[in-house]
Amino acid sequence: LSNHNAIRINVGLKAKPYEVVIGGSGLKGISKELIKAGIKEGSKILIVSNMDVAKPYGEDFQRNLNEYGFKTHFLILEAGEQYKNIETISQIHDAAYKANLERGSLMIALGGGVIGDMTGFAAATWLRGIDFVQVPTTLLAMVDAAIGGKTGVNHPRGKNLIGSFHQPKLVLIDPITLKTLPEREFRAGMAEVIKYGVIQDYLLFELLEKIEDLSNSSSLSESMLLNILERSALSKAKIVELDEHENGIRAILNYGHTFGHVIETLCGYGEWLHGEAVSMGMIAAGKLALMRNSWKQSDFDRQKVLLERTGLPIVWPKLNSSTVLETLQGDKKVRDETIRFIIPTQIGKVEICNSITKEEIKDCLYSL
Ligand SMILES: NC(=O)c1ccc[n+]([C@@H]2O[C@H](COP(=O)([O-])OP(=O)(O)OC[C@H]3O[C@@H](n4cnc5c(N)ncnc54)[C@H](O)[C@@H]3O)[C@@H](O)[C@H]2O)c1
Image 1 (spheres, rainbow, N blue to C red):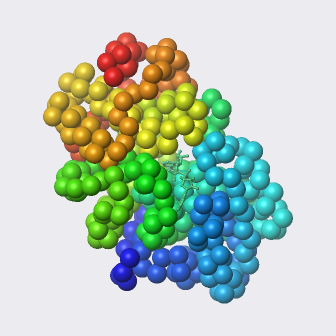
Image 2 (tube, helix red, strand yellow):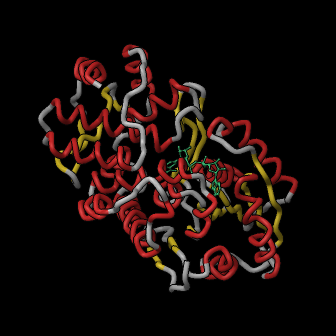
């Protein structure tokens, strides 16, 4: 990527505002950005990553921090959703103990959403909470997971059932890291970008429709990529500002996720990528909306075509409908026994719906 000034998005939370910094000096700017974010020079830092990311980026990243006088330690975890569990959190805590991390120390998540969610949760629970910084290296984590302070791990019976809200001090996005990201992972991230289009950004949706080849990261121009990153991060930041702890509007970010989580839980973590499950989940939620006459067939079709053109799966996997219902009921989104669904009313608008019956869900699953 050519030189350009960093794009800065403020996540304006009253007690703990922070910046999402996109581009600029990228990873090379980490130390300066940390100091700008109020991290004291010389602080101890535990960098948490995995081999896929540490190999291409880890050494330079750590050297930069050392040159600025930070005292760094590096922890490499196994890669993959199947390791996003409480046992791995213990490994991070063990490393925090060995590194002698104190209240003023910092953890940095250098990786995708799995590393980010786990590092955030480990930071939230170490010494009852120390600071952490997100350096997302997948498209999905850049546009979604790294922003907003949701951290946690999976329970064998359900996605992300263990966790806490813990906001990062800084989110530093270097789009260059996407160069090494496998294409399948890139497409999975596009699912969350398309989600922002459907839930609240009609212009983004239209912009995506105009891109000739969406399934391949190298076919995106630099300015288009930066535009997508900025619009998505802004979407996320604005919703988080309005409703940090998901008591209301933030739930719209879960569009496609309620059904998606069922796929992840029932097919086994790691079988489908999170973004792929969300894609199938958006089709299911879109179908539910269609069956309730909540949105038009033409809108449903536009969403389907965009997901398909991105190379994302759009066919619901073969799953037993009673097991699906049971799993849906175990999801976090259940309140007072009713399952909360996010239902689109047109491209760019959704509503939160608490009145969907089991029969409707069964009919919907049957029709997929
Ligand atoms: N906290 C939130 O608000 C939030 C939101 C959405 C998703 N999530 C979570 O995020 C997770 C999914 O995140 P993800 O899609 O980033 O998956 P991931 O973290 O598993 O990363 C995908 C794969 O890409 C590899 N990788 C990462 N960056 C790379 C790079 N630059 N080059 C080469 N390989 C690279 C990783 O090692 C991994 O194998 C899920 O667990 C999901 O629940 C959280």
